Each structure stands twice: as C-alpha cells, then as structure tokens.
Length: 126
Image (cartoon, rainbow, N blue to C red; front, side, top):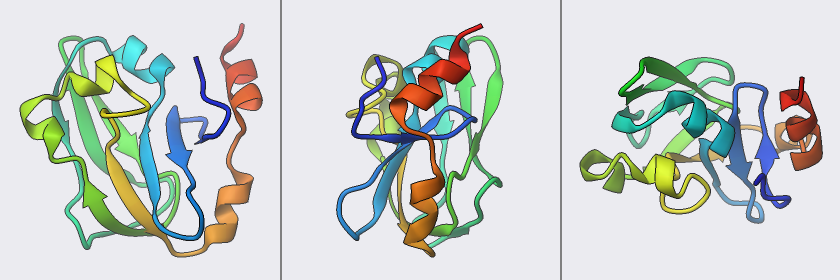
C-alpha cells in the first residue's frame, strides 16, 4: 500500500527521489482515502519557490478542503496539469498519474530526513 521506493512525511505526502534532479510529490493512499472523492486541486505555479512546512495548495473533496504542505524547500519545476480536468486521478492512482508537483530541492540532503515506508505506516497504526 505504501511503495518502498518513496519517502514520506507526517502530513501524508510522498516524495519520489530519482537521482539528483527534481523530486515528484503527491499525497499518500491514506490521505486520499481520508479526503474522499477529490473534485478540485489547487497547485503552486511553475517557478514558484516553496518552503518546507508551508501551505502550497489545496485539495477539495466532496467532504472538505484540505491544505497541501510542502515537504521540502525548493522551486516548483512542474505541476500535474492533468489534474485540472481529472482531479480524481489523485484518488485512483495516488502514486502514479495522480502526482501533484515536481520540485528542485534547495538542499537535497533534507530528503534523507523524510520517513521510509515502514516508519510512515507504523505512524498510522493505533
């Protein structure tokens, strides 16, 4: 349920690290399940600088509106434009086509401080 090749945050975002380039960010299966059916996604613009822990967008579902938090500091280099027309991709494929943004990290070493899949999952269990 939580891919081993990803890093995670306590705010239920995942980060895919692929070499030294930008990282891809999305929300976990746990988060999309808790939100319910996603009907609208608001994301930061390409070129925008984001700060770790700050609110960078919103996910609107049939239940509520939830903030999206930046897991790292850096510059947004891509956003998933497909979500404008099909926000439900966040529900149906949270680790694939439902990704949210790509960020060039200001300091790649902070990625080492994110959670692994086992630690993230252990934090979900009562």
